[in-house]
Length: 162
Length: 380
Image (cartoon, rainbow over all chains, first blue to last red; front, side, top):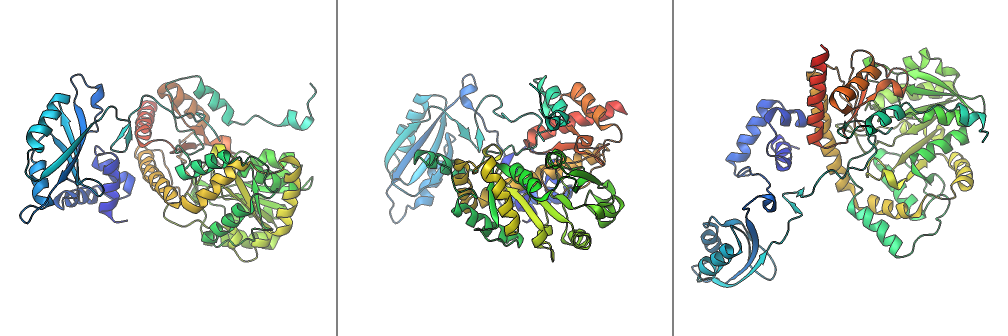
């Protein structure tokens, strides 16, 4: 495995690992880790670092919805152009072109249900290319970013064993 | 009730004391666990459930399901080990049963069995229960706990009838190379020693492929290889292991097995077939994660001044704690709530060392090593 991939595997699990710990885990020296991170960022492999937040546990937290969007394309308007317009809204947390029954899967983050509804009905649905939207409010989150949302420790192994 | 002398004389395992000390507290981070912190791959668990739903709850053949034995034989081609699934493979209830059967099938009362130490704690009692006598061959930190011809000779192992090998090793994490095995194999051929090779950690090696004494010239016919699903596939609680060896040895082991166990449990055999068919990728992911933890732990112990050689396998580091390992482990548990196992529990040559299991999450490993560093600072 090359150095960038090894560093990426560590960061993808925990973006807060410091350079010395990444160096220890990968067997690379600290300078090589720093160079790999620089290269990953410069090449737009790593676009940023964020916390995985359980918004249900935050007072005045946020509500999240997954919105299916269907679009109709024409000579001047391709997926890229539509995506570009949708992605500009700060409420859009993630935007994917997907295979299957609809075109775009959009994750929208809002203050409350009304906030998200208004955003979809007033900003997204009226776009000329958009033919249909279906909004799914997320009721509960059990896992995100590869991390299981749960309390406590489910390690039921014996504390000391041969 | 009156007990047999044999049972009465069997000592309590040294692990037990630390288990009780650790269990008495609820804030302990344990680096004392000898099993994976992962669960068995989902596909293997599903296969087990599916077999139950289909009502597959009968005994299997004494030797284990033919479909499983075939896959085990195929699987071992990766180690250049070639065994006939019909006659040279026996599926057992954990690798522990395979080790016990091997002792009972190969050891006569009064036979001497050479065991390198420090090593896994079950061999001595197994030898004793089979009526044999253990001859201890200490391995040395200077050799990174590999077994050498010199150590065998120095311990008088030429007089032994049998040699037990456990590499990758619990508790040291040591591995053996082909070259190191060549020396030991020559000794076994010269002195006519048979071998029980416990290779339960064969899938967990870092950097170099697993090597086995059974593939050395002239060794296949005098070696029983023990392996299983516990460590590679995180299936410890499903209790499934196996032995590979010459037909006459496997046949003898099976004759004991048919009276004492009848057959290994059926449900895990279905899980194991699926594990061998489809779970290589999960094993690779687990190995990669163990490897990251291994490097972190080894580098942290060396930074805090506890000399630690680079272990090539299993999920243990074996730092030198520079003195009384039992006192160190007890005081560390008391002062910082971190459990490790004193090396002396694993026999001669283990004293002055600690077995540190890195089968725990990176977050806990960091917290535990921070606490150990604080403890070491406080002692200086």
